[in-house]
Length: 169
Ligand code: FES
Image (cartoon, rainbow, N blue to C red; front, side):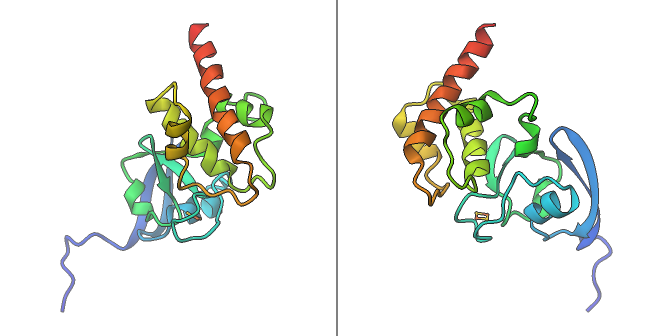
């Protein structure tokens, strides 16, 4: 059976918008977005945890919503804004959410923090004053095996305060 000339190619140059910049990559379209971000674009904020869409370590934002980049094919990011941890802040200019997580010491091993912070960003963008239930709901699919849940809750509240203060300036 011949393949239709109009069929979508399985590979070839793909252009993504990552952290505000256009990036082009030549990979098969079903390559997990996480692999492209880490291996090709050297963006190592998103982590490989379970690889099954269950732990949240690989979370990035796609058009502002949290996405498990380990199970999202790279083709699904075409035409959308991908935001990774690197797009939030830098060591010299931390994003208020990053500052809040540090100030609350909301990490032990730190492996889940990428997902916690990116999911917090999505939450605070849509709900700047979340209560505990809102935070639990937003972070319920981000797993932390160290048990820093109390500090993480405090960090999200603190981040909301920092963002509110910044908006008043
Ligand atoms: Fe993607 Fe666990 S590594 S959800």
